[in-house]
Length: 132
Length: 228
Image 1 (cartoon, rainbow over the protein chains, first blue to last red):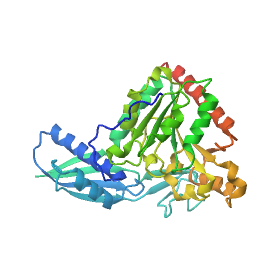
Image 2 (cartoon, rainbow over the protein chains, first blue to last red):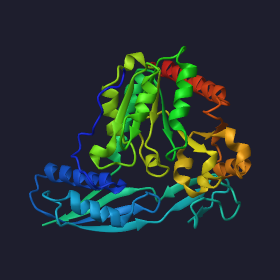
Image 3 (cartoon, rainbow over the protein chains, first blue to last red):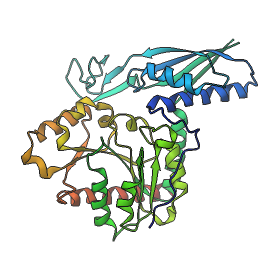
Image 4 (tube, helix red, strand yellow):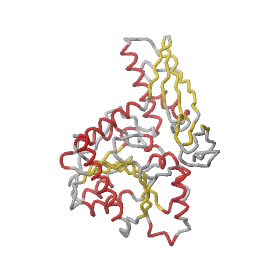
């Protein structure tokens, strides 16, 4: 039998919450903790400003819930998540038109080409955070 | 006090994915990430593929599931190294991420692998957002799922390098329009190549195996050209 021992992540085990946003909430806290450590900042985080693309597959409600759960006993506990949604913007690779698609399948409104480049809308950025 | 960060949260994953890619490039391992909804037939496709390629290549598999080692057991009977990742211990994550793959790579003897398959968690949404360090993303869609899946779940199809249309043996028993399915996939990803197959009967497995051989050759040539 070649089955090796099961691999489990080194991340903290969080039973009972099954969602994509959980790992993203952990990612936010990790990035902020690194920034705080770098600056030797001991304050508490009041607000986190996020830029989330329309196409990033992130459900804000689920993210808020996950964040509340993951931030307990960290410097981010009780921080407010301020989410700015970034609309999807595309460029047609055939005629060069820039447009904001209305549907999930991207078709150039001018030349009807399907050869489309995504300019924005996939990002998941921490823009800034505020501490006290 | 406001602190400007401007950091991509997914960047942490991408950084680890690049590390995985470097390790796999040095070892000249072709790595294929298979994504689909649950039940599309990824595991049976892998079984048939391993049967076909095992005599010529050394193959390894990383299996991702929320729970159970059922799939790993199905593949382990071919006497190849299989690593099972279960995400139920980490909140039942709906996708594999680069860190999980990195840990799995650490458990494999990479010197004895030429082709590495990563069977992602059955889910047409989240796996597409996470780079694992693979060479190619393969999307499997079975005929029973309907011809509109590419336009309903465009993100996964947009990022794929190859579409495997599975369960071809059912074509005459279903009210599915295969041409419309392919047309829909090209609407989302105009360059998406597709191979139609039936893992059950073995039809089309040769073409898929040939595609893998070609991809491995290409990777070897590129590695040589880069001198790594």
